Image (cartoon, one colour):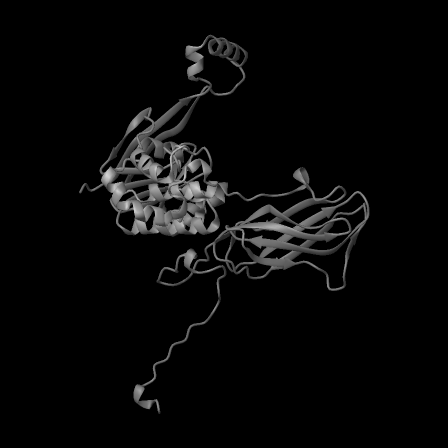
Length: 413
C-alpha cells in the first residue's frame, strides 16, 4: 500500500460568476447576459472567485480527518474535486485507493422505482459492483429500518424514509477512501446518532475518511486530526480540538442581541440586549448572563428564566431569574437589566443554544435560539489525556481522588 492515501498539492479552483449554458446557446440568454454585463460592468462585484486557493495537505492510510470552516470556505469544493465530480483549475490531487463519496445523499434515486431497485441503482451510481450490492443488500435494508416498504416506489416514502435508505446505501460502500459531506445533518436525532456510530465503525476498520461537518461534536468524536479552511485556504492543521477551538474563536456562530438589533418579544416588549460574558468561556470558569428588557409603557414580569440547550436541542439547564420578593416592574423611562453570575460553569465543551422563558402581563412563552454559548476545554495539570467530550456527558464534575491498598488477609469474614 502507498505511504499516502491522499496527496494534495497547490490545489486551486476558480469559478466564473453569472455564466450559464443559456448564456451561450439561446438568443434570450445572450440578450439577457449582454444586458446584465453592460449594467453591472462597474458595480464592484467580482466576476471570478477562488473557491480553493493553493491548498496542500497529506492524508495517510487509515486516518480520519475532519474539515471545519464557515459556509463558503471551500470544504465541499475540495471533496468534489477529490471525488472527480469537478476538475481543479490548478494543482494536483493524487489518490491511492478506491474512493466512495457521501456528498449528496440520495443522488441516483428514481422516484418511480422501488426501494429495492433504487438500492441497486444508487449503489451503481456510487461505484459499487452488482455483486457487492447483492452481498450487502440485507445489511443495507436492515440499517435503513424500512424492510416493510422496500418494494414500494420511493415516491411514496416520507422524507425520513428516503434519507435513511440513501444513507444506508452510501455508508455500506467498501472503499479504501471515504469522503463525507454533512450527511449527518439530515434525519431525526435518533438516526443522526445511528449515522455517527456507523461512521465510527468505518473509521475503526482502518479506512481513510475525510469528514466535513458543521457539527463540532461529530468532528471531535470521529476525527483525531482536522483541517481548518477559510476563504479557500488552509489556515490551520492539527488536532481536531485545536482546530475547532480556533474556528469557534474566530468564526463561531455566537450571536449577540443589542440595541442595534433588539428583538420584539411582543407588540410592546423588546429584548434590548442578551449576552454572555465571556463568550467563549472555559469550562469551570465564571460567566455572566445578562438581558435587558424595554417597553414604551409600564410593564411587569412574573417569571423569567434563561434556557440552555445542547446541540441536539435538549434542555441542559436553566437560570431561574425570578426575584425572591416577587414581580419585576419597570416604567417606560427605564430599561430593565437582569444579570446572573454563574460562579463555576460546569458544562462539557461544546456549543450551546440560549433561549428565554418569559411570563409577563401580555405574553407567556419560550423564545429559542436567541444566542449561542461556546464552552471550551479546561486545561488540566495532568499527564494523561482526558476522555473525549462525547464520553463525558453534559457536565464536568469536580472531585478529589483517593486510593488505598488493604491487605487481603486483614479482611475478616
